[in-house]
Image (cartoon, rainbow, N blue to C red; front, top):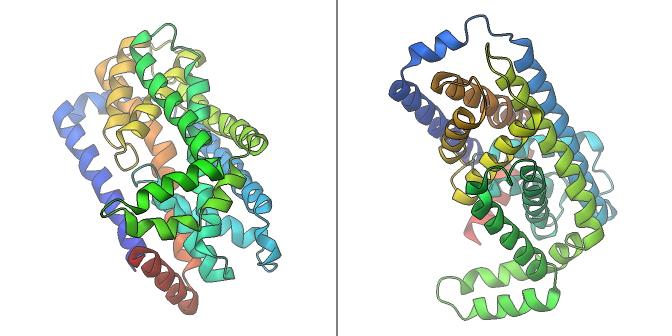
Length: 331
């Protein structure tokens, strides 16, 4: 199945990256830092991530409601919606997580909902994630001015995105200009079908609600990272510092536009954690970063892969999903 193959490619890239990092930094010291480690804190970080997924599912459900999807798909149950949402996590290791539009593919195959109607949920999700990360990074950005350009660029992108994508007039003009460009023009007609849903979801009152949920969700990931870092012997980590580290590191990964921020997020976290948290050595910083990413990104990949496999057990549904995915690729 093409969708499962794409997921496996991302996972394979992550494995290669992490194995390479272990070889480069020497696995021995990292293993030593984990001797006697209180693994219950890693379990708590997993629980925080799981709660975050439920909050993000609430965002998905709210967006479906605002788009009135169930008027045309009355048989879409909360259970199937949750399975579709979780399956989208399997595409987290894609640039900007845009692969999470897989949810729209699955929703079309299961309930006949047009892809263009729900694909903009990913746009709203990413924008509100960036808003949340900027707000959380304010816990420490004043103390660490080196990260100010990253926050500034993110704020500019968010404002531009909200203004342009939230205005039918401005978005329409951008699409009209795009139609005249070589290579880009053929995608414009398809994008026009996204305008109504995009402008609906980017209304300020909806953005506010989604942003609050994003702050809560990402805040839980920050708490998880704090628990992981503070669990190492002789380390004195504050929640405020770890909140800044995790949110700023995630912003670095997002702006790199690498699949899942692989390499960029890990690299910035290792360097910054070693420099800014008292008692952290290079092996501790590397171990904490790996545990933090396993408890978030890779935990989501595992959950998403299982959900996707369960969703595609029905041969007929699998065939429709593959056809819908192929249709979007061809378009």
